[in-house]
Amino acid sequence: MFRRFPRTLIAIMMTVSASVTGVLVASPASAHPVSWGWSDNHTLCTESWCVRSGNVVRMWQAILWVDGFDNGQGTAFIDGGYGVNTHNQTFQYQYIYIGDNQSDGEVGPITWGFAQTFCDDWISGSYTYYTYCGQPSGTRSMQMRENRSTGEWSFVNPRTGAWTGTNH
Image (cartoon, rainbow, N blue to C red; front, top):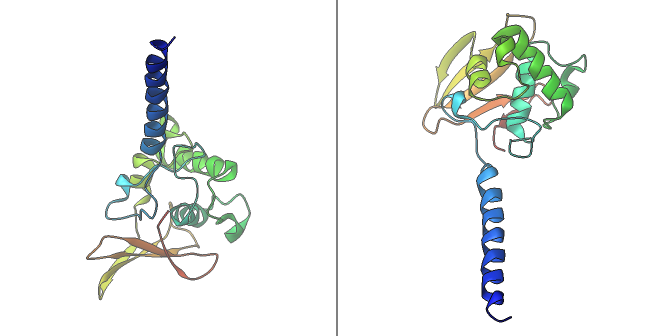
């Protein structure tokens, strides 16, 4: 009986260790901002391994809003939660602008890279400012800026009118 105890204990410890490691690897770091090129961002989606809430989701929802993918909700669509509505609007955005074979409702490197299209940019002080005018250019727009020394992005949240960092 005593010989089985160490083997059982080792098996339990290995299972717990693997479970904890899996959780730690799957979770993106907190307070991680959008920086430099957007294609390196964490994936946004409804699954537990993705980023599902925060200001980076608000920025994506603002991009969808500019492009008219707000499901008729206006700026109320920009709530910071990546739920079914944001997933469905992202799928439609991808289907129309990126192509059927890239439509999965997740904001990964291809979708982030495609969305990093700006109509106008200028440098002022320590920031490069951008006006996102949408795909195709419409009546809505959104201001964004990139800190030239840290590469961190912020945007004017159309719902609040305030500059908002992209941490999640």
